[in-house]
Image (cartoon, rainbow over all chains, first blue to last red; front, side, top):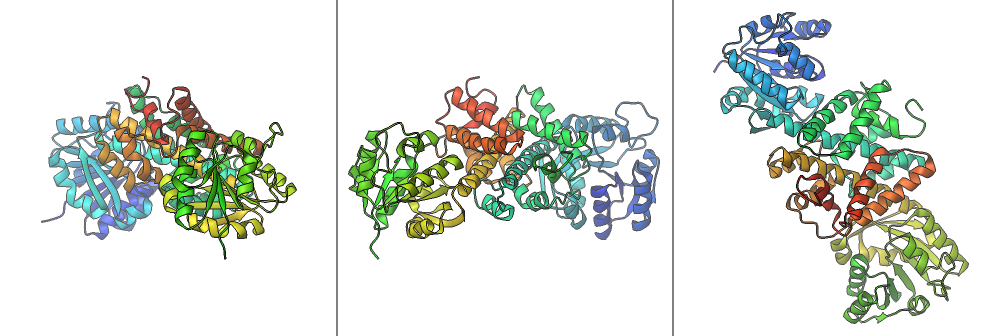
Amino acid sequence: MTKETIAVVGVGRMGANMARRLRDQGYRITAVYDCKTALSADLAYEIGAEAVVSLSRVTELADVILTVVTDDAAMQAIFNLLGDTGDSLLIGAKGKLFINCATVSPSVHLAVEELAHHAGAESLEACMASSITQAREGTLYLMTGGTDQAFRRAEPILKDLSVSLRHIGVTGKAAQVKALVNMVMNINTAGLAEGLGLGQSLGLDLTMLREVFSETGANSRVLVTDDEDMQNRDHACFFSAAHAAKDSGIALELARDEGLSLPLAETTKKQYDRMVAEGFGELDKSGVAELTFAGRGNH
Amino acid sequence: MTKETIAVVGVGRMGANMARRLRDQGYRITAVYDCKTALSADLAYEIGAEAVVSLSRVTELADVILTVVTDDAAMQAIFNLLGDTGDSLLIGAKGKLFINCATVSPSVHLAVEELAHHAGAESLEACMASSITQAREGTLYLMTGGTDQAFRRAEPILKDLSVSLRHIGVTGKAAQVKALVNMVMNINTAGLAEGLGLGQSLGLDLTMLREVFSETGANSRVLVTDDEDMQNRDHACFFSAAHAAKDSGIALELARDEGLSLPLAETTKKQYDRMVAEGFGELDKSGVAELTFAGRGNH
């Protein structure tokens, strides 16, 4: 079976590495697009794709369009959800498949799917619960939401990107699960930063403390990924504080709709909002330690 | 070498099982004491010890006195730290060793050590980061603080109680580490309850959600120990909400002394305080889910 041609919209840290991985797997990446045109130009040159500045041209050039943008507003822009631009990925989209990988609100995925169906296209949400290295190596953890038909068409491509692929349910459901994963992860991260920060103030050996945490009820996945970075102030970005604030915000909006009060998630969101406000939004989420260690950050 | 005789003060869920374990390992448990005299009478009958109602008599009957009480106030009472009672474990304590296992403030451990030295006795803090099953089976995770001399004398007994034994440093340091472990664990627990509670409101399959959490950045030790209990509302007590509130409180007091603000720990303490206020203090810490799942608790 001939592989479908692929375009990638949004070629930041994640999107660019997914494009590289698919190219390595023998796909033809026909077009790349980014609102930061320098990004798309560089990547296009590297992988032999066309750097495109018109959204409808993206759709024209590929069978499958992988979107890996930043947030709700970016999704609204590329699909012209608000009807306020002349350009859209949905122009001439009949028969195309959109695979939407950004962590955005479930309602946005639903709106995209509806308009895609109107345009005679298919749409699938494919939420990623992993980071840059996994994108490059094709070992992402992927959760999808959408019709079975869209899932089956996307499956070969998604398998080449992932080590785990789980079809959660209808559109919106995968984004809900993803929002919950990141909400809990962000809480654990902000909590860990408090434990290590207090440990440092008390003069405890942080390497010993991290070891004890790892052997006790304080253990967590973020302890493995973030503890050393918190200790060493190495906040090179894998998952930015700004993204953490956004994702916790998505979960809190779902909670509000359900009439639930989630004080830990709210407090965590405030910490990440504070990072953004203090100019640390582009640090890795481990940078929340800058708020809780004495003598760090803007103190 | 003849094994030292042992008394146990505080024979609740943890203390009683540590006494049973030591008896099984060939120690003579000469005395047991509890302010709830029914508890000590039952256990004394079971393991062939003397149920004692005078603290000085406890000390008289044993070489080593293991204290496993509830909180700062209980430690103050048994060692007469406030000088307000006629009875104390420190009466006639010359040559004895006190091993103090309760999770209490580091400053209380320091005060006990000072008075013990005055009385010609030795004192060691031995903080436990595990639960009832581990107490019974001698597989506790133990961290000690005190002099090397006290540690060496206590070591054979502590090895018979533990699978991991770590001498952290001077008195107070192990209690600090323990407070940090429980502070972080409590944050992760309260955060997990929010994730699962919102998941249920959204109509997600909680078994699937727990599985996804376990495979992603949301994973944690409390996910292993508490997630199913939260889903099934099985809050039989291993580590009570009241204890969780107390331990987070110890950590927050340390933070206050250091001039640190720890918003996640504070929010978590408020959740456990709320459980106590609403009459759920004796539920397991997983019972915090009663606050975050729609239609549970007192709602």
